[in-house]
Length: 100
Image 1 (cartoon, rainbow, N blue to C red):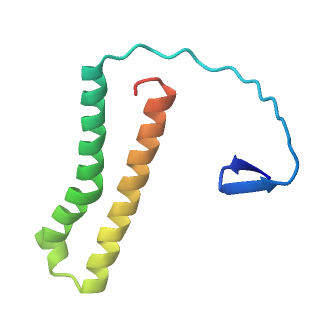
Image 2: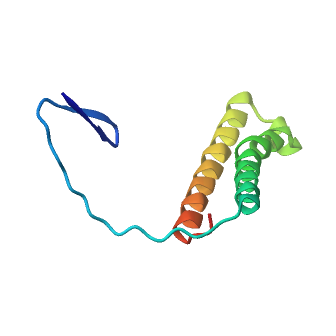
């Protein structure tokens, strides 16, 4: 039995199968350890600010703190979802433009 990985799990094949996939792989750029650490720390800081600190600071602001609890939850959740999507798409853009 052969196990083949697919995007959403595993595919079991009871017979041997060989698949040849040929694609162009871009050349890797040389990156120093220091540069990699700085970029990694920057990614963690952006995720932390965008998905933890900013929604929390928004809930603590005077404009939102006086609202009913449901409104506060909706504002915080909406802010979190929008900022998470922004950060993920920003990371994808940075990867496609070979910045990270």
